[in-house]
Image (tube, rainbow over all chains, first blue to last red; front, side, top):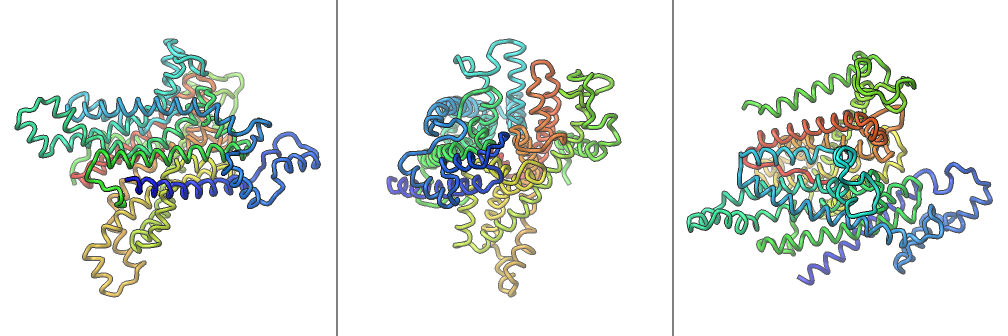
Length: 310
Length: 276
């Protein structure tokens, strides 16, 4: 077990390195630089600024410097917010994005699994039809439309929740609901089909024959088996939450790192882009590792050393 | 042939209608998509303007139809390009296995691990905003889905008797892969294509929404929705129409894909692609 985790962490470190290298060269070689926007600076001024940030060096040099500094925990200073180190900017935005992400994940897992079980238990009923529709609608609805509908109804029409900004717990409700909608649909769907399969299996028939209460069969015996598909999807779901957060933070004007990332890409603020890429990369790798460990935990048939062929 | 489900039939009819309207856009619109009429800004739907007007007094109905052209083109073209790349990559990896497989799968894993839309954002600034940038960046991030699918299928097929006999007959690798193995995979591939199209349409709208996609005055459903969001307080129709049509289109594709999956392989219910 421990050896497996170490192996995986090592392989994750290589993936992370590949990722940051790819992103580094992609963004440096992209046309346009951080300091050639609107204001046309005199060439000497521009040269000075570029020198201050090491942008006059060849790209591979900049790469080497960046890697060396990162390994010492220095993510450089932002270009846009000059004087502010990237670690400070991430430090102020990450708690907000993480709060959003954790709440959305909890909501989508909790509600998705519960609804999926319910739909499978009452297969063919109106509950099942509604959840089936939600699960198809969930992957067909773009996040901005979910957000718009929620804002229109709950904040402009009913006035229950603020339409934007981050100042009270109530301002968490609409962004979290938006962010959770899609993963909820996916989890519900996966749980429903896994649950249907379990309910038809031999061990459920045995439990029924023994006279176990129906509710105990569904929520104790079959449920444990039906959690597996949702767990294996934890990695992609975490990825979906990251991209979802870009739109959500933009629409609801939340000062998280998703919003910074898009802004930084547009402004060619290299240090911020790289810093946030690094943070996202680490989070996603850990989520994937957690998913695999949970998977093995929930399903004893899975041996960790084996390479799973998808 | 078994009878098509009502929901699948409705979806197919809806998609055909939308495509037809997009193709014949100049014939069925009264205003040009970039004709501005400052006196009539932000109007609600009326007899003159079926879906109202936007911030600059342009006819939303026209902009929606021309936007449909962009969105559908992007959805279909990027899916086909992704299929081509995925077929090449996936078939090669699955057929040869070993080191080639490991190297290709490493790349695929990297793409899988990192949300494809994040990479698409980075590719967009590399390629520059506009239709060609959108087409390339979405194709380059979507191919891994097809590659994975094809590889898995090829891995299974490789062990089958007909491949072995083809090899015994002395056929070349490329010929075995593309003439014998791939044609047997069309079922799952068609299903995944039907599901990839709405994913890619939504990817385009996501990028355009963030301001990284189609350039004005050209429109797509994503750019229209982004404009609409800015006016949500006083002209909600500007986001309801483009968002709604995008939703219905994606819903139709997903419903159709679902039905196809069940129709081709009734024993196995499809598991939704859960990327992004």
